Amino acid sequence: MATMGDRSRRLLGQVGRRAGGGVPRRFRPTRPSAVDQVVLQPEVPPARRAVRPTAAGRVTLRRLPDRSVRAEAGDGVPRWIRKYGLMAWLLIGMVIVVGMIVFATSRIQAVFIAVFIALVVTSVLDPVVTGLARYMPRVLATVLGLLGSFLVVAGLLTYVITSVAGQWQSLAERFGTGINQILTWLETGPLPWHVTQAEITNVINEAVAQATKYIQQNAGDLAGQVLSNAGAVALVFTVLALSLFVTIFFLARGGQMWRWFLNQLPSKNRERVHTAASAGWYTFSGYARGTMIVAFFDGILAFILLSVVGVPLAAPLAVLVFIGAFIPLIGAPLAMIVAAVVALAAEGFVAALIVTVGVALIGQIEGHILEPLVMGKQVSLHPVVVALGVAAGTFLGGLLGAIIAIPLIAVVWAVYSALHQTDPPMEEAPPPVPRRGRAG
Image (tube, rainbow, N blue to C red):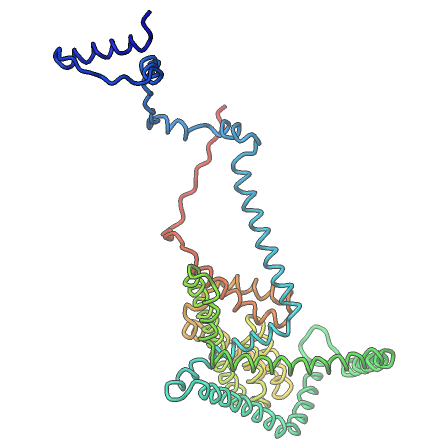
């Protein structure tokens, strides 16, 4: 009986004779197990080619209805709820971050005020120091710039104090005469109601008596408030000293400090952070310098107006107008009211009316000529945004909040505009979409 190996050798011999034209060839026999595995191996069907989905199939997958997508997701939440829910969570997160910043700033308010003053002074003096640094070391230019600014401020204060001291006696007499004229006008004037001088005197005496009684009953509390105010005075000097210290380093080594900060960031984020910070500093410095220039011109115009009308204390009132220019919306009207009251008490109703109209005209010149000319497009905020910002700053931080609200909003908007790429603006509003009526 032939073995499996003999049958395999005969089969291979027949195949070789057919392929070699009848010439027999010798084949070295191999182990039967290996030959058996080759011969008896079952036939493997050819593999199928991978079928690539057609365009129609892809379109069909993309055009699956939302109901099918929700069914695959398994949660049953519509896509628009997910989208707007994510936006709501992002908005809540932004509000939380802003609230934390405001809370942290309120805890270190003195430090924040010192840094803010230092930034304002740096933005105003930086062009002067940079110009002097072309001819001398920057440290020496910083010292000269600070000394020059101190001399200017001291000169203004000296002039105001000497003018008040020189006009005090005549001013008291003119104030007394003006108040008597006002009382006479209230008693015999064309108003539908009249107030006699005796009634006004009784009201004043009652107010003085109530004030005296209050002081006597709350002497201890008032003494504590005086001591706390003394501590507040010490805090003011501390803030001023800290702001001076920071200003010196900002002016002398500001560029090196900023490069050090950028080097602490990842290299891929440095250019983006520098772009945003440059836009913010450009806006802040432009606002500070522009406000300083506009306030200076307002003070000069107010001084000329009050001097021409003959109102006493023209220099202190001009300084008051200068300070009021730093408070948007409310600073100039308050300065106008004070100047008008002084003019009414010293020169009469006509002078007060002239001062009121003149200060209002100065405000129009400031808003329509000086600010667009000096600030340009560095601070382009809508008046509604300015009003809301001043109101919010006043509620959050009082007078300080009203002062710093507008520059902070301007800086935030400048940084956002530098980082955000807007689409091309529309030439006109799109037409209204017609409403489709329901089929009956």
